[in-house]
Structure formats: C-alpha cells, structure tokens
Length: 72
Image 1 (cartoon, rainbow, N blue to C red):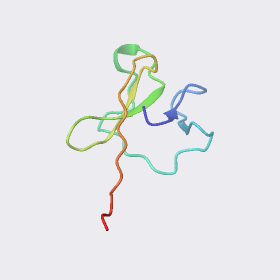
Image 2 (cartoon, rainbow, N blue to C red):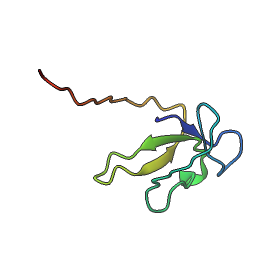
Image 3 (cartoon, rainbow, N blue to C red):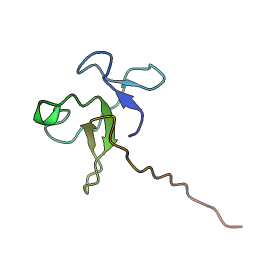
C-alpha cells in the first residue's frame, strides 16, 4: 500500500494527506474493484512495469524503501 485511497468516494482517488492525484500509473484495466469487491487502497504491482493496482485495504502488504547510498 503506497498511501492512495478512494474510500471516501469510488473512483475519486486521494493521497493519505488528502491531496488529489496529480499523477497516475494505473496498470491496464485498473482500478477495477476486482470480483465486485470494494478495493479502496493502492499498491504498486509486483509485475515488471511496476504500475498501480487497487486492492482491498485489509490485506497486509510488505513495504520496501530504497535509497541510493553514496560512499565517501
């Protein structure tokens, strides 16, 4: 989960701080509320394209942080 949600209103996505999306990278066919289930949270897809997918919020997801380190 990367901090986006449409829990307040379907198909109206906002970041956790309440700001609207100015950029999107949805996977083809997403967001889709797959299987008729309400999917209100946003995850980065694990596929090669790293595009976005809507997902149910109650499924725990791992998180990964990356930062380039400069050695001196």
